[in-house]
Amino acid sequence: MDITSARFKSNRMVHSHILAVVQMVEGMKTLPEERATMDLFDVQGIEINAPREHVFEFVRNPANLPHWARAFSSVDDDRARLETPSGAVTVRLDVLADEECGTVDWRMEFPDGTVGIAQSRVTDTIRSTCIYSFVLHAPPVALEQVEGALAAQRVTLQSELATLKDLMER
Image (cartoon, rainbow, N blue to C red; front, top):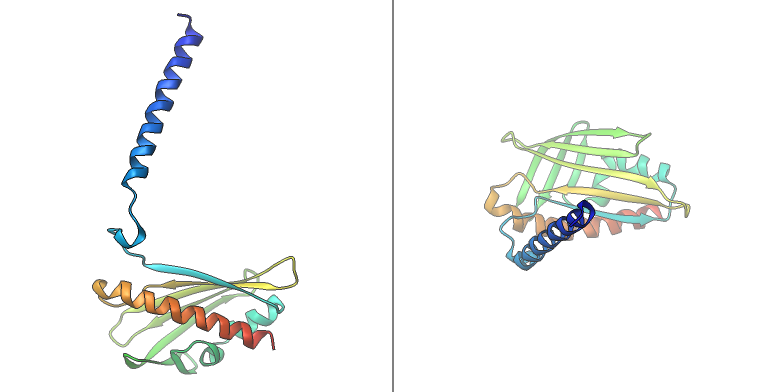
């Protein structure tokens, strides 16, 4: 056997081994509800028929949060009042916005010192619209509550994005 034949045979064996490993891993996959790990974030987005600059200016202004983000009942300087079915709380709110990149990030510090964060971005499209994307992180609650809390917030976020779209397209 020449060296080329030996390499070909060796490569076929490696390929065969890799294929067997891939098939084994594929067979080990479970359905999402059977996962051992839980999601700690969710990313959603919506296309808005409005100029990027208009959407960015609206989103970056924390005083506008009560108009489209359900939990925010009021925002004052660096404080926000959150009201949910679980109760009401005042948090310290920091907003970091970068117009050039189109990013708007929020940091909320709760009275007990826990911190919640969210990031978002407004990007142009070639269709004279923009896309607003939002990274929703699991709230600062006990780990056993995270999955239920995040699942509920996913649904709320979807509704909030629709509200934002409606406000921006008027």
